[in-house]
Image (tube, rainbow, N blue to C red; front, top):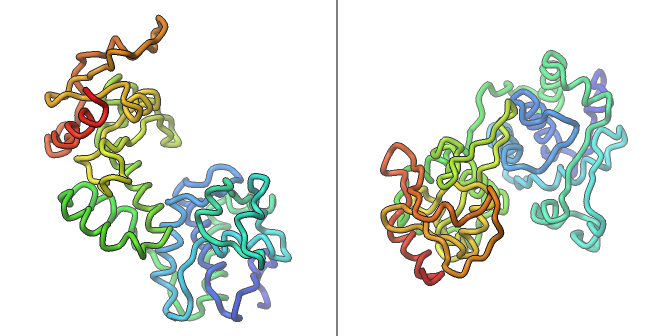
Length: 311
């Protein structure tokens, strides 16, 4: 590895495992796309999506299984100290007896995130240095292959399924795949729902009209399942509604529901103090819905919610 900076030198299982170089390429791309704005790298759906995109494009040896969580965990062992893993106390319970990572779920459960070595983080904040290190990674670990200019975007594909699939087709696919579906896929599907539903509602709460965003695309509006996913396996738009956090919790707990003509119902036994944030004043208010009627909640899903909570 003559000429390769020491922070890019990684130990690879079986001598040629591509997981760590692929993750580093994904991290560099995440900087490019503004997904990393501080020295804190989380196992997010967006980073998994970039990892999967590079893997699909660059890795052609079937003996290696695509597992995002493996390099995310094992990069902490590099001699260069490029990667420090941080978790909640008790993370050792998420490991096997061989002190290897069990799953992506273990990373998420223990709120794992990584930080880069300080000088590397500062270097990668500069686009020209990222471009240089990207080419070095390609030359060393993917010799003879061209740097892909575009990556497969599976997260966007799932968003299109959420918008365009019928609930029946979507649910049938989930029931076929749910026993064997990888955790990464489940994380991507959950993230696609959380991204697409607020987008269709203009990042605005359908009940209160609240819209809060900033230049980093942070917003406070949730994607709420009308019929819980565990009961329906349905992530399509007809089973979703955009709500602010307090209305989301009220809806999930049966404190509010929605009529067939999209007006807010409030539980008769709801007790609350006088407040500008009270729920009861919204009783009878019509929802703020997407412009296209095909993006509205399905009447049968709203009916199931009312029936469940006795409205």
